[in-house]
Amino acid sequence: MGRNTFLMKVFSSLQVREIDKLTIENEPVTSINLMERASVKFTQWFTRKFDSSYPVVVFAGPGNNGGDALGISRMLIERKYQVLVYQLSTGPSLSLDCAINLERLKTYTNPIILEPGKMGEFPTIEPGAVVIDGIFGSGLNRPVEGTAAALIQHVNRNARTIVSVDIPSGLFGEDNRSNIPENIIKANFTVSFEFPFLSFFMSGNELFTGQWEVVPIGLHKDSIDNTDSLYVTINAENIRDLLIPRKKYSHKGSYGHALVIAGRTGMMGAAVLAARSCLRGGAGLTTVCVPQSGMDILQIAAPEALTLARKSDAFFDEVSDLSIYQAIACGPAIGTSVETAAALHKLIVSAKVPLVLDADALTLLSEHEEWIDQLPKGSVLTPHPKEFDRLAGASADMYSRHLKQLEFAKKHKILVVLKGANTIVSSGEGKSYINTSGNPGMATGGTGDVLTGLVTSMIAQGYSSLDATLIGVFIHGLAGDIALQTSSVESLIAGDLIDNFGSAFRQVKGQG
Image (cartoon, rainbow, N blue to C red; front, side, top):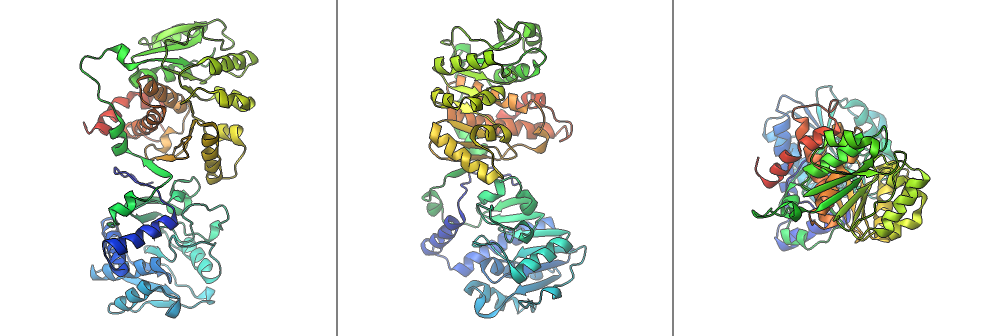
């Protein structure tokens, strides 16, 4: 997926069109000149990626996305690329700007018209050619059918490399639950203008977007700033703004005391990872509540942590004094016994500080839904998709699951961190934050325990639960990205993330 260091709002397709309109009205700029800007930016990206030895095949639709593609064709021809252009439909069905760019292109080459209804007469695509997909843009509001669907299927079957303009043809900007997957372009690369679309972040749609990147085209800044969005990306710039500098004369008491309740006999690794993460995240003090049988393991693996022995090796029992802690994590490998459930409920109703609940604690919470509204203010749940489905009901796809996440967070006034390739944080205020760090190497046991410890550490230090969660989610992913520089997606393990927290914090601060 794309990597961008600037703040990005994620707007709906309708909002993007409105921002385009406001840019045209307020800059002012003509719509054809705004299209020209987009074509220039795409062409600059394309020429960096593919030199003129690659033959280029362009498929342009009748709307403004097709107009972009025609402008790009002209610019590539000017740069001595060999370009074949196919136009789907002509005449009155073309948008005004598409018609203008078609006439401009005719100075250089005559596009080949693909007549509606002649589905068996699509062009041969040579194996070495790069296909530029400009058939449909984000204005599409129903599944592709007929000739256009047959063309998309033809391109998907025969093209080795496809680059989509703004959005893969056939893909909707948000909700694709009613879409027809075989009638959507399967791009290798997508170059989007100014903003990514929400659908780019949904698992399953990577099949269509491939690697995506956003290029700026100079849309009106005030229009962007004044347009509300329920979605914003989490990236280095906005995390940098959240970090609070440490004072010279501070001490361990200045940075809070975190409690981590984790582990059971035979599963102490989860406790070790959560504890080390909490320590490396910067908490002044970290106490780890583990079974007596795990005390030696913890003290050897994390000597900086304080320890609190549980009465039973078989289950988690209650912690007598919670008043000394500023944040409490509970769940990694604690088990789901009746005794543990009782202790978890006692923790929920007794705690006066935010809880960060993960793993087994989430399983128990799903079995006792009435406990959710008893959670302390600022509490954070960190489920992976299956854990969330147990909490909120099964979902057929990520978009449906995310809608439930939004509703769940708003209903219970808590933070829900739905973990995945693009982890999404939803708040009780109805806003969602989409993470842009992380990589597939993090799909390994223990990384969730690391995230639990890190978010807890940030809350203990005095950050609001929302800021703590956003920082934790981004640093967690960035540490994985940094670890990957000297590792591989196959060999990455959870402990590697903790070892790279320092580098991640330094990078966010601009310190290298």
